[in-house]
Image 1: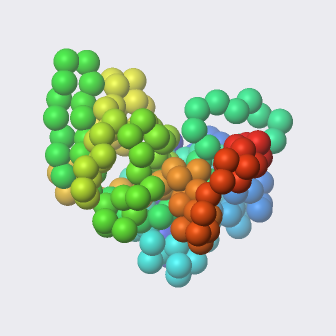
Image 2: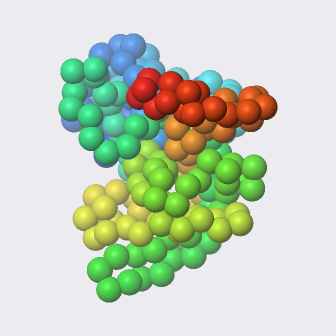
Length: 194
């Protein structure tokens, strides 16, 4: 986590014990940004007009999720997240369960084709597994550990969140929407590249 110190003239300054280098990629609430300035205890990233148009800007205050980019030498586990926000989602339902909490999130219908049951999704940079997919919403189940260590505990009905859909679903949809036929050789070739 980091704390927003200021946001002015497209520059977001954050307080953190993490000490990045100038030029490092770092995700803030799931959005991949570049470190452009540093002072002791803070660093600054710049937001382009495109980024500001795409993300939930109102959440760039108080505490934010922060994640440095993975290095090629790092251990790969869990889901692959790029920090490329597709759209903004809105929390429409919160249901407490015995040892978890379900969150239903609505997104624009045109992005639903990238949401797959038991597939991955990133919500404000938190990599999660989708439980159910409906017409315009999907359901996530958040365990207590995730609730205690992320901003999910602060989310209310109507909270807007940054959504990054499953990278592989986006790629496959884009590739196959341009192809007239799909062969097993094509599928084998795609799978072999991962």
